[in-house]
Image 1 (spheres, helix red, strand yellow):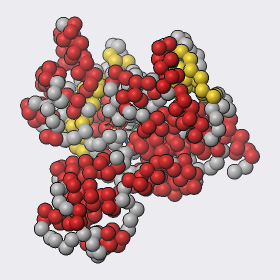
Image 2 (cartoon, rainbow, N blue to C red; image 1 turned 120 degrees about the horizontal axis):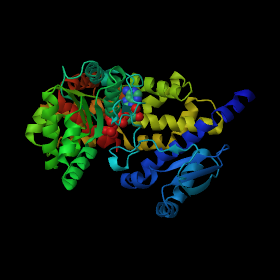
Image 3 (cartoon, helix red, strand yellow; image 1 turned 90 degrees about the vertical axis):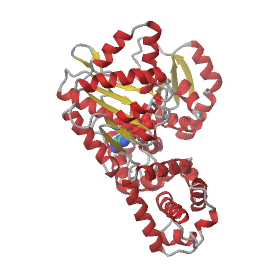
Image 4 (cartoon, helix red, strand yellow; image 1 turned 90 degrees about the horizontal axis):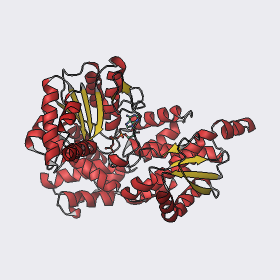
Length: 470
Ligand SMILES: Nc1ncnc2c1ncn2[C@@H]1O[C@H](COP(=O)(O)OP(=O)(O)OP(=O)(O)O)[C@@H](O)[C@H]1O
């Protein structure tokens, strides 16, 4: 890299780099701290990073929080910043000025299933007439990379945003954490508002709906509540699994649901599981969830992960070489949120060290993450986890027995071994009692084909993958 490139990096991107440093720190803390602590104390912080990154000022809402963050977290935050930056960083805490003109960086929404009350307020789109849609305008179809994993869900969502109230009502989108469900529903709302700005669109997290019901109940304002919800053209509701065990909420949602469908308004829902997999939700609601179109979003496949990395890096003003994207995509497999975290670490690392992005740099920036992965996912671990899950003996993974009750879990374990480790087909065959690589290939193809067709198998694989990834 030339001298000129050095100074360009150091100056032109110093604001972005400050942003990246703080975001990388937040990502690390999200992994290190219990979710509750992270959401309460770290996520609401905003940071101001000095020009040369030697000083970071954190802004906290009030004196009480300032004292608490200083006592409980300042040391830890400083240590993470130092590790990321490679030099000691001076940390200061301050109370957020009321009319602050300073540019600060807020924590991104990194933690899964964060309680809505503590989530950062989304940018609110005020449609004519003053209706607040609560949409995040950054989450559009344009910024959502398409791949096999989300093709169907994306196509259905596109269709709904173009002609709401007709086909696929309700649209029920399900999948594991960080796979883009929230992004997709915001995209539906943003597209509809772009096409028809007078539409009444509302995005709401299921927990917020629960809390609206509780408030309406306490304040006896059910008429307003009903008017608000029943008058919508498009209701986007995220994470409906949170309705479990909330009877009153389920009743109100049922009413809203019926009212909206009757007037041909559209409902788009997301959940971490398919409707019949939901627990503690009334049957009449579950059957309605399933009465339109139910589509899954799968974990992104390799090519899609590569494309996501390259696109997101470009959006940050950086070209990520394809081989680096491939290296990262091979190693970070579980979901898009983790990919984003890995990308932020790499960008921050490259900016602070004034080094171009390469595989060596990515390996260095992600060393903690890679070592955790290498430690956790081994073929032995997969065999044990799958055997436990299907209640067979680990020894059956190597045995020659063929009854379906044993052969199938064995095929599932082979499939997972191919998916989650770097081992080749012959190596996997060897670890499964010296089987031929064609046997492994057959298992991998069979299970991945069936996974597309059989919801129950897909669900079991999701559970196994989550378990193995820790
Ligand atoms: N296909 C994609 N292309 C680009 N960005 C994506 C894609 N899928 C997900 N993302 C990004 O990944 C992050 C996580 O996605 P999102 O919050 O939508 O996940 P989710 O499925 O709703 O997860 P959770 O269940 O944890 O809420 C977001 O920043 C989102 O923009």
